[in-house]
Image (cartoon, rainbow, N blue to C red):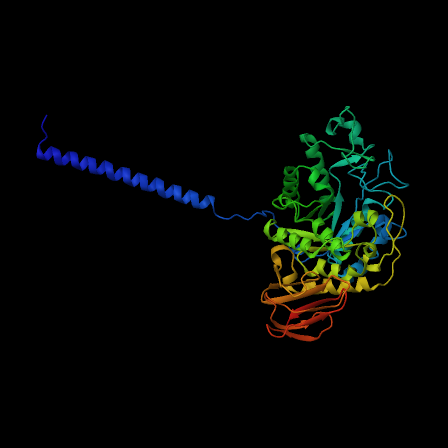
Length: 472
């Protein structure tokens, strides 16, 4: 069959139309794929929770209610709130406030981490109304209260053992088991594969926020409990009120949706080993490198030189850090991190506090308390010392005695903190060789003016001496 010129033209037009449609569709599909590919690689914030506004430059204070006073009660602790406010603490962490198990208890009073009833108050400390009064008075003084929560395990005589034995883990022989590999014989482990257990635990945590108006939780051995449980609980608690959550764990994953803060155990070990001659400055560099590169910028890391674990088993702050203690405390506050005081540190507590028996703190005035008060005041007024992304990143300032002296700056809103700490028992004469240190400063504690420049930056530090400068 032959095609006429008119028919040929018509056929060509049809073919051209089909070609344009195909090209247009291909172009549309190509653009869509490019757009989807761009979206897939758009950076997303790792931290998807919202920190409470009051936590953004906050400090932490741990209260061991049993040892905090001779009476060991909420009422006695409440009487100390004006002093804690003056010290400059913001978030009060109460160690577990629940009744303690009798079965297999350790010592005369047992461990507060062996919980017998999640919905009750330990009568040793007072009543529910006493707890409510403590929380209300803390709020009146501009402070917040978090409870220590033990979700991983219970006492052997918790009613849940009898009512829901299926909620607990079993050992190789089919018996209830404590947390494996640890000497925690006074407790037995939950099994979070059971959905009703998760609902029970979540409901209990919500109860204390509603009933006692607490402001969040410090969660014991948080890494032993599934992350997805914590993610769900955080969402449910935030629906009641903005809460602060601290995990006793050191993990990036916990920061995404569940916890504002995690422990900086690696920081503690690095500083402790450095000042006791068991390690070098390199370990501290490793910590800060990991903190900056592996953890999200808006993660709060709790930095501390003592807490109930370290005090009970390793020794007092003086035993652990010796003459290097002041420098370690300074770094815990002016370096990146959310600083913690364990009750009694500010009094220069000279003894380890008993963990399973009564052993009240001997309160007194002490230079350590003055140091913390001054440091916390500086943290509260200087924008560079905020927590997470609300503060300035630490920028290393290399110096000529790098094995002994740590130097760095933190800057935010055009204001800089320049810290120099001698972590050795020898006099150190240093010069700064690089980094953003040049500027006009005031010594944050002595009040002296000091100008640092590329040509004029020599500094002499006595053994264990530290200096903190702020731009004028």
